[in-house]
Image (cartoon, rainbow, N blue to C red):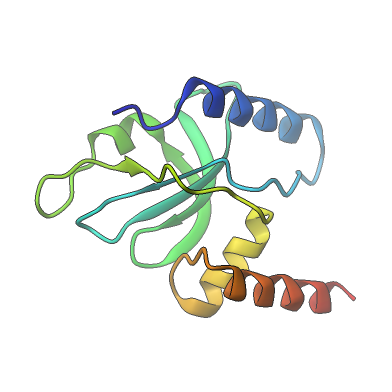
Length: 130
């Protein structure tokens, strides 16, 4: 299975170009959610580096959630405890900016995608910005 579709790749490259052009960056929603079905690792990816299309940016959780860059070719080679490869969540739809997912992950200690916790994280970020 391909980790990301051509459509997702195109969108992530567009977002990478937009972030490269704007100082301070843009807080995009994640385009794709990848996970290991047998190793508790999750990636919510927002953009691809236009100068190095193997690098994707997003929220990565390998036991401790953090924002950063990851190699797509390395993700394609990852295998979990039972030898299962990284999979794409076909049902994921990033509705919030990546900062909200990051805030919710810091609170929960892991990446979360349920609306209740994401709405709470959005409210907390809004309060911090006031």
